Image (tube, rainbow, N blue to C red; front, side, top):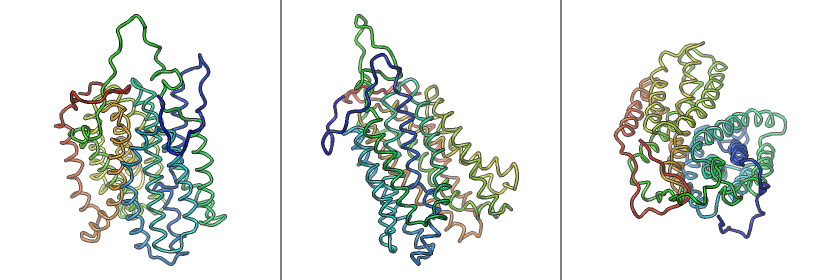
Length: 437
């Protein structure tokens, strides 16, 4: 597949030699590393900069929180455009453009001087890091797999999430040694050094570009029947299917409530008798559960209808919310952390793995761009919802009981949403829109 590019031709990808093994798993490795490079734009990565910036810029915590909310919402608006860039120009160009801009914005964060420039910086790192680069990295894997697409995307997300979890640890150590402004510059350099070579020489947009096929399948028998190209949905057609909105709502529900629980975790678990150190340590079982669940769900999507995975994800989310009053130091807290981590990761893995199979590949960037926009925006409201509920009720328990209506409603949507059907006029591509039940 030959694609036009934005700013002249990119260097050719590293083409495998004839007879070499299937390159799809190498693409998975590159995509996972690129996904890990989004860490400085993710909430955990930003969180370690908050206190130093508050002190240096003479801002209040509320002002920084408001700037972060505005930045997250502003960043969400650009995701459909990033999706269009992937579809029109390919993952290589999209990753080069988004990764390069992300590195520049990270460098610019070293020069923020007040609330306005901080807000602009937050817009950039949330748009290009949490949203844009994440979308490109996970979407770049889809053309390389059909039968094992869920597993491949699950591995990509799990490994990438593991790298993301290391970013705040490294950033905290660097801030203590060289200060927060220099740390932003070092992170910008790291992103550029890691992501741009992957985009320019590592990724390959389509296996057919290098004479390979999805899943490493052999060439079809020239004497056999001519295969019929699978059909693909346009973005408009996908948005008219109830299943799209059910899964998008599931991603938004876990994004909103999961971010709210994480943002207030020290205080929330403190109500249950955990010390600040114990509450912070609860992120460990959350991360481990997220990594394991991502791979498991990715594999399940290859065998199971997405509605049942969605139902399981919402059940985990509801279970975590109901469990808060019963959390105590020890195994109960660990079980809570596992449930929270599994809920969020299962919904994200479901969307990333099921949409290429459900809607095909021709417009998958545009389609996933809408979901990413919804997901990024949802994370802006979770901390605020729990905070306002706490102010009104004096406890997190009551507001979580009220918010239970969200996973319940999403579960019902998933159960009643009909199987997506392909309109006769749908454009055809080389992707897959396999039967879903």
